[in-house]
Image (cartoon, rainbow, N blue to C red; front, side, top):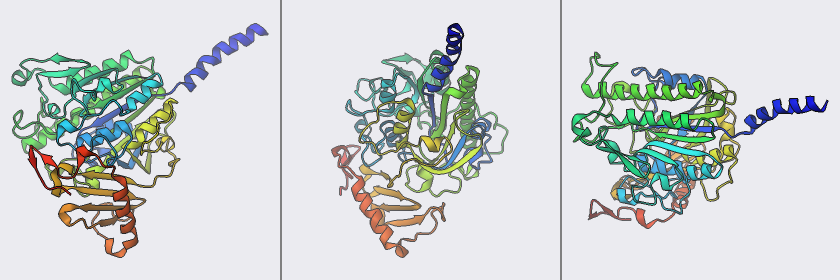
Length: 455
């Protein structure tokens, strides 16, 4: 009897331990992929079979938000759980002001404290080599790619940051022998293989389909081939953009396929998203913003509402669509909860674990907040989402609040501010409340060495 009991326990204990083990977390993020680019979000011009399959195997959110309308603040909000009015980095410029400090706590640091191995590739933007903000000083065991966001504008760079050092690619800018995205995907696959016994956190902050530096490619995009769009009767810029989205989709598929091959599908939460909206110069044939108004660098929905797909086989229902409102600042408290990590004080996000599993938000959220244009003074703008209401105000428009009801007007076509003064007043109060003063982000201080308008 005793022997049979021991045998039974030996069978069930590994199963219980497996069930109790926190999930691996794979967070894949495109750069400037618009809300309407992927097929599962209504795109019909560029084929995205792997992203679409991920949505069929999991949960597709229709009201997910980035932390900002440009690269650096979006990444900072994601990493720290603090919205744009509280974050350490609130704008793209000046770049030397956008570094995280030792006091800042990132998703990687929280997960590392819970026993996760943390690795990342791609565009970091939150601290250059030699600063306390570099990725390997902020909880990542490994980082491969670009630390500086300007460096990420080059797809054939002469080096890539590699943990504490560099992978030298001398002459690559001339020879174009090593496309950076390909190198980063190979490193991503290697990290996952090496970490398969878990738990692990992988952050794939890919640069595709962001435009390239003008001195690398004059038409704005750099890609090794325009296949499978070479024969289309399009301008070259459009062919390149479509090819970049195709490459991104292909490699999302490779990563998901590897996780499945390793038997990690039921032990891994996969999230796919974009850092902000698509660029305004993308050809209209692609309808990069879908039904939304605006683009990257604006606080209309087209600049901040992003594709957001979550798959976790056996936990997230297949083929579900959710209208729950989730945002980048929610990722830190959510991942901490999933990992069993100690909750972090002072974050603006809420845990959305139930929403990620196809349910409703488990915690009430008062509002969402964004701003942009600090160092450009007259272009400074703020936005608040309060329930279904969305309010925006900009210095260049005399700081008058525009008001939209997103439940009825997803395209922000009809300003109803005059009909709802009480809502406008609440949103104005939140705009004042949401901004924590920061000497690095006084409105309109200095840009490119010249003093400009200040509030």
